[in-house]
Amino acid sequence: MRAILSVFVLLAYGVPCFSQWSGNPAVNTPICVASSFQDLPQLVSDGNGGAIIVWVDGRNPPINSNGDIYAQRIGANGFVQWTADGISVCGNGVTQNRPQIVSDGNGGAIIVWEDLRNNINANDIYAQRINSSGVVQWVANGVPVCTATAKQDRPMIATDGAGGAIITWYDYRNNSALANIYAQRIDANGTALWTLNGISVCPATINQIDPKIIADGAGGAIVVWSDNRSNTQSDIYAQRIAGSGVITWSTSGLGICVLGRQQWAPSIAPDGSGGAIVAWADQRDTISVPRTDDVYVQRVDSNGNRLWAAGGVPISTGAGNQMRPIVLSSGDGGAIISWNDTRNGSSNRDIYAQRVGSSGSIIWSANGIPICTASNDQDWANPISDGNGGAIISWEDERAGGTSRNVYAQRVNANGAVQWTANGVATSTASGYKSFSQILPVGTGDAIITWGDERSGSDDRNIYAQRINANGSLTSVRFAEESPSSISLEQNYPNPFNPSTRIRFSVALGNGRRGESSDGLFSEEKVLLKVYDLLGREVATLVNENLSAGSHHVQFNAQGLASGVYIYRLTAGTQSISKKLLLTK
Image (tube, rainbow, N blue to C red; front, side):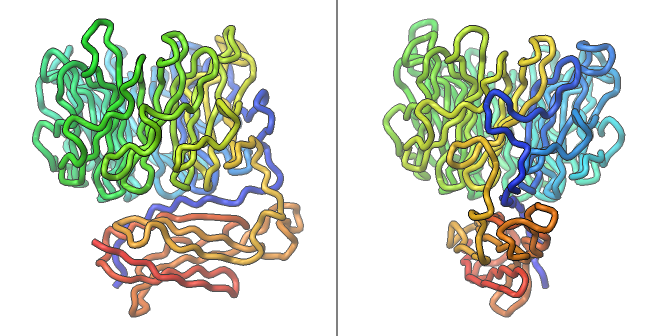
């Protein structure tokens, strides 16, 4: 009997020779250049080497007054896949704001946003699902996630692993001056599964704000937030919610850090074992005013046990301010953290990063390694995995001076050595101001970056994107000579594993023409990747589709299987390769 599995497929596709991506950082690829403003982009993988990008859009009357929600899909080759300038996700004549997006696991996405349709003075939360063709799947203009009294702010979203999503936000229904944290699960059909208008994640009566969320790998989620229950300071709390909507840790949340002075701006990443790693800005070490921030981090397991030093591990406690930490799982139970840093001068923010091991040990240089220390400010660092134990970090950069604000990126390997040009590769240097940049991993070591762009004028902000390759080049061209000549299957990593492991493979060309079919495009091959038990019974199909030539990977989550040895088999055409993997629980 086939086990019911939670299988997350993240395919890193080979990229066609003929590409729309620009190799010139002053050009880039336009996602939306409609009139008025487009802002606050977010992006998620389309499962096919490209991305789905969502943003707030002011094109509709009254122009520049109301924001609607639009989205566009861009393929791995840099060509937009849907209607020029994007498709409308929600455009009901009132303001929608702050969209967030997560994959639906089927090539589409679920998008959530703040919405003023019911009260122009109080946001509600709405959501919409869009398929890979750009067709909305739920009620026009979205389904209500929460329409409780007062306002609901800053929704954040994570997959539930079953085609739906878990959404969290902070909510003023209980007190117009004090927010609490709420959450709701919505299934693949747009039906809310938990209590109407959401469950209370934290019932404490004092302000809780700035929630962040990750999937727990078991149909639920872990939420972290800033918490003022001590009255005089902000602390960091977290809660795990089961897929059924049941709170699984302490009723009022687990104190991640409840020391003196301020702890704030939490960031969260999965630890790979059902728990989480949380980073935050921390003022515990500063007595004088104005106080400065340091960066701390803590790991918590799936049962709510804090695994590292009480109060957290210091990541950077040097001179100046260390602000806006963002944490990224390093794939081995540890993390890579990046942040903004003023150690080199209060008017010269730089980008630094640190790696911490699974036991909480500091791996790179004390107080972090410099990612960028160019002149003027570098801000809003965003790290993603490079697929090989390191990270790609993007940021907004003012080294050019004047009113220019550009986008740069750097790759750092697992040992803390930067891999690209010193102080980063210029991703966008077109005239004007760039803001709200976001980055997405595609393939192994490649990335797509998107941002709001004022090259057409400050009153006409648009959305642009750029692909950057693992070697730091901007074009996505991979010539035919780089394509594999036969199928190959790598050993899964990690192995043994629990419950998730990555399987890498490559596929050959189907027509023997070194990368081109008769119409000049890359050929495709029907590929199967399946998992069997030792009795030969199929327990999972990970891939069953046509794939272009190149390297690919899939994430196999064996949550529903028993411990033991399994066989995974790759088949393409007449060729087949098998290997063993070991699940330990």
